[in-house]
Length: 67
Image 1 (cartoon, one colour):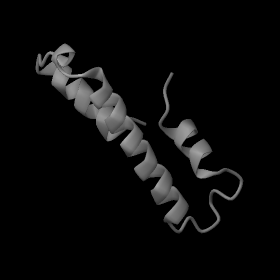
Image 2: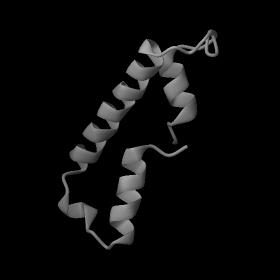
Image 3: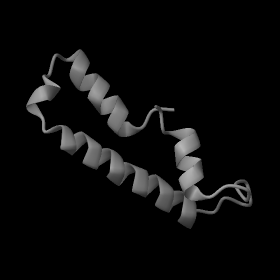
């Protein structure tokens, strides 16, 4: 599953927007903010026991992190 930040980066590339002009830290900061939002939503949301065996950090890593 792609995150919104990953989608945005790909869209900018397809539109020939030079990402080198961006400070690379901006994309990484945006990814960290998005990660925290996903973790917070998982932690604060009503999962109805669906994710009892994993924590929010593990959920994020398994669902969104690509290496």
